[in-house]
Length: 24
Image 1 (cartoon, rainbow, N blue to C red):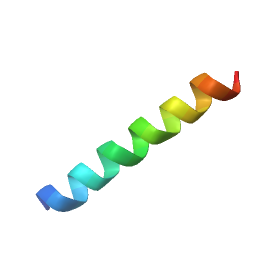
Image 2: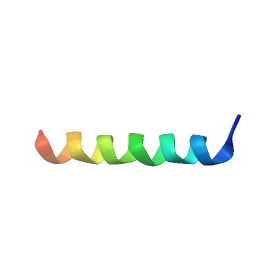
Image 3: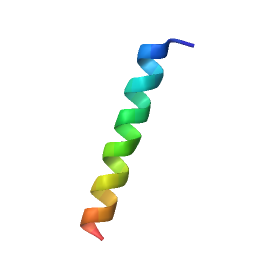
Image 4: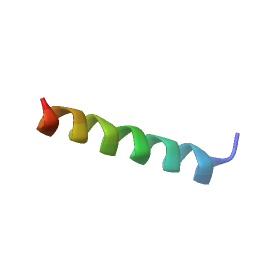
């Protein structure tokens, strides 16, 4: 597994989670 790709996915998921928290 590519570490860079994994980190990008994690950051994306974190951003989406924050967006969900602020929009709700």
